[in-house]
Length: 222
View 1 (cartoon, one colour):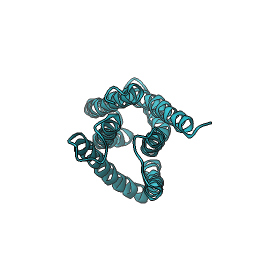
View 2 (tube, one colour):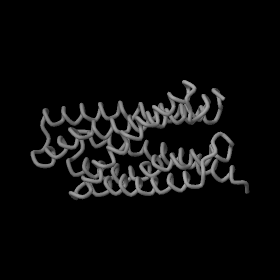
View 3 (cartoon, one colour):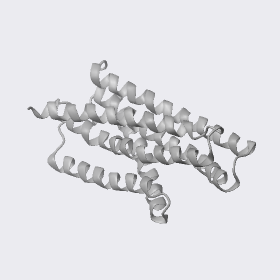
View 4 (spheres, one colour):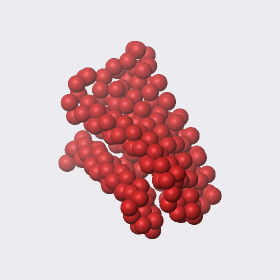
């Protein structure tokens, strides 16, 4: 089997497990806002969502190296062995920080990892968008083609995911009040409003991922 087929297969699996499992996260999270359910059932739905969410987190991070490796085998880019090694080392470090923080938010060190992850995500997102804009302006490092556009879109995806996490902060506080105070119109309003805002960022992320996949499959910009 050629190297191209291997990276293409992994790239397809990445999209499937990223979007497929994240839809489950979205549905469980949305159901946890249902005031007709008992408080315990709502928290079970939320806990299930947070556990399932770890897999799309892994796929989100792995989109970076899989995309680079696939582009390399297709001849769009020609990174050196040192560049590829540094990329994989960064990916592994980011994976530990990203997933480790999300899986241990109840621990102070997990919260610290999440703060570091938000800084990485913001920096990576802005950096990749700058790279894409520079490429389309003719300054490189890429040609003005589908690779440069996908780089920019992946950077934008990182920023929308950051938007999801930031939007979830007040929602998390509302759930803490639900656990201690019980249901009330004020708390339910905070939960539903916070979830609606979070889902706007989620839907924006889905749209960007679909656009990125479409561009990668069709090569409509070369």
